[in-house]
Length: 114
Length: 109
Image 1 (cartoon, rainbow over the protein chains, first blue to last red):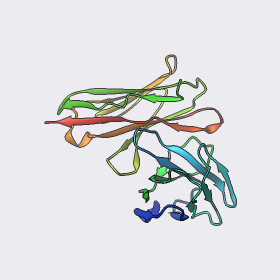
Image 2: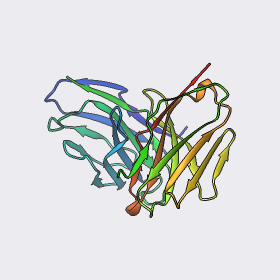
Image 3: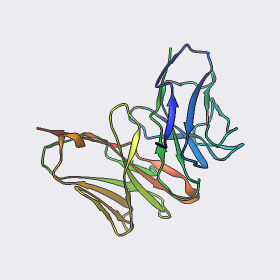
Image 4: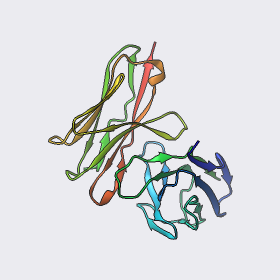
């Protein structure tokens, strides 16, 4: 079955450490996205990528970095510069960035930083 | 005014009831509209797209009101399993996709 896989499901880190969240898709989608969800807030866009080797900042990119070396993979690094990293992180994809398609989501990674 | 707004609820309704949620948006150039369902601690899943002509899928009906800039989701004959948070998403100018904060529905016996 095609889909998006995020790993791990739960991640715990100490403050000051960088951490990388994995996102892999086998839907052959060009566009991939990272969102963050906090209680009482909507999903907020961190970064997105329309094509391999290209990515753009979203609304809350500070303290995060991404890479898109392969079409299938779009890992997100939460750096120590991110002030409030504890959140639910969702990776998503669409066939293309500008085709007004709904998002397909991975099952999320819940990151806790103490 | 927020780009996309939803009443957070919770909406507590008895099983079998009809319930409706609205989602208002500020950008009149918005192009595509969706409703997602999100269960506790899970990812959002697409429930239905919202077309200009409306969209019905079983007990669920979605409508778009461009004049008043809102979309709605109507659930008939509510089931316990409908309990979840319902998120709207709107694609506005520049293909920017914005989510509402979600409306929580609790269906009770």
